[in-house]
Image (cartoon, rainbow, N blue to C red; front, side, top):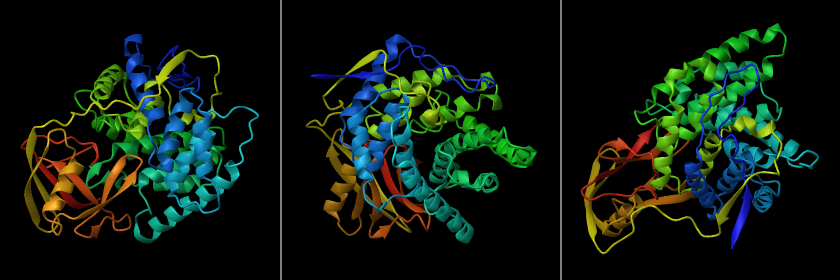
Length: 425
């Protein structure tokens, strides 16, 4: 049995800004529809591991014109009750998901209630930055907060935002510019910028600061463009595309070959890099020419072309385990290095190596983990816990280079030098 979902396929990747602004145009040809089908299959048929994972999927589907009432009801049920045990960014994405593609005349009872909670959480983030220089979460979530408050006319200080977003250190993690954070900030500032364009001259100073910040961020995002067209890494490319769609007046057409980015993204899809529903949800909107700014400025569409999505769980493109085994070199690095050689079945992921190491030495290699919207992530090693307040985390590396894939998805190879390192950002 197959579900038939409505999906707009005419004029793919024509992203429309307000008439007076430039737009970046990409086009998905018919021969590439199968890649979109794979993403949709992953998103719709996966079992969601968190509230925000299902919200991300709902948001993505809504943005491209697919109405999944069952999923929306599921997300709504997660918000029942008074205790919203969510970070500010998690709450923001749930608000975006519930409000996206909102049918005219349909009652939306969560808006004022959830927005008031987001306003409070956002102020808590700001107060924490005032006290110790860091937010309670990270600047990506703060940018998501501002975007959501801006889109739904929540309360925030434009002057405060203009000042806060001009601190360049907010966009760096471990000395490296974060494409994800910078791109989300561009979306947030673009929303704030547009909301001010019709105000009186008193807003001019803020507009100048915001314009300066967007220009800086766009330049940094483009500087992270790889030779193959990816921007930052595979998983930051989607949000970077969104940022570049809405900021084309800040760069020359020759500075970004959007079609090359699309072509490389298709290759990454075929490699199984987007088999996580959150990853699929983030890349689909820009492939369809949509951004998070579209949440409030387009109607739900009903008479659209149709995609047939199977009920089967998404196929994995990772190597299947075979009878052969591989040898990898694994180390835990804190103040000193704890090395070990581990044999695992061919096709194993990083997490399998960690589990096997823990079996062999539960003192040096013990660890804990939690499930997130991106899959499992490591919370502690040797009893040493990652901390948002202390800006510490467990970094995964291969051959001394940081990995963009998670511990549950990165497939290890024979002879590889793997490392988990206690790091700060």
